[in-house]
Amino acid sequence: MNSTAQPADRSHDHGHHHHHQGGENQVEILDLDAEVLAEYTASIIEWLPTQTSPRQIVDLGSGTGAGTFALLQHFPEAHVTAVDSSIDHLRRLQEKACERGVSDRVRTVQADLDAAWPELGSPDLVWSSAALHHLADPDRTLRQVHDTLAPGGQFAVIELAGFPRFLPDDAPENRLGLEVRIHAAVDRRAEQMPHRGADWGPKLTAAGFTVTGERTIDVQFDAARSESVGRYALAGLRRLREAVAEALSAEDRDALDQLIDAESPQYIAHRADLAVRTQRFVWAARRA
Image (cartoon, rainbow, N blue to C red; front, top):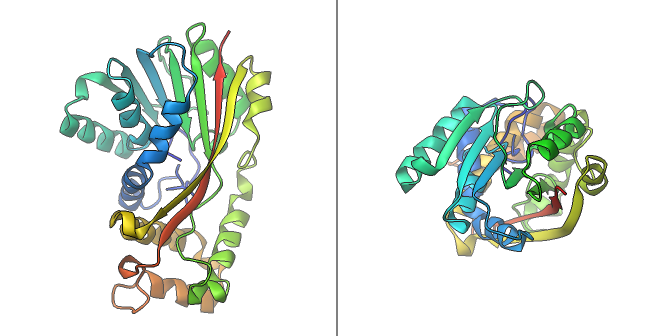
C-alpha cells in the first residue's frame, strides 16, 4: 500500500510504491498514506491470526514506515526490521522513529529484493504492503520469506486495487469521465508489472505456506474526517501528472492541471467533496 524494496515505479500507489522519481513527493505521499489510512492498517493488524505476540517482525518494502509504526504500536514488545530499496524512505523512517521515541526498536536495511536476499534473522512475522507486485520474480521472494520465517511464523501480504479515486462520481470532472480516463492511463502503464492484481493465495501455497485467512477491505475516507485528505489527493494527482501526462489528451491534461493548480477554482486541496476510495486485499499465511 506501503514503498518498497524493488526497482519499479510506484506511481499508482504512493504507488505505493513503490521507482523513485520525484523523491520528495513520493516521501510525502507515503507519509500521508500512513496518516489517512491508519485505521485501516490497524484493522488489518488486529485481524491477523497470530497465535502469540510476535517479537521479531520484518516489514518488506517499508517505505517511510506506515506498517512499521502500526506494528510497533500494536505489538509493544516487538522489534521491526524495515527493508526498502530507497535510502530516502529509510532515512525518513529513521527520523520518525526518533520523533516517536522508538528508534531502539527499529532497524533499517537497504536492499533490492530482486537481488541478493538480506540477512533478516528468523522473524515471527513478515509484513509486506504494496510491494510484492513490483518484483521481477515474486515467487522467489515468497520462498525466501518462507525459509526466513521462524517455524509457525506468519506472513501478511497486503496489496492495492490501484490508485485511489478522490472525486465523487457526480463531480463535474467525473461526469465528463476524467478520473476514469486517468485511471485507464495508469492501468495501461502498469501493464509492465504483470503481477499487479495477482491472487497471492495460490502463490503462497506453492511457496510452502498454509493460507490462514483472506479479506478485502473497502476504504472510504472523506475530507470531513481529516484535512489531510486534501493534501493526500493533491500529492497523489501531482504524482499521476508526472506518470501519465503524455498518455492523456490535451483536454484531460488541462483539466488535471486545474485540479493541482493552487490558483484554480477547481484546486483539489480546497474542495470539500473529496473522499479517498480504494480497496486493500489481504492474505495471511503461516509457515508450518
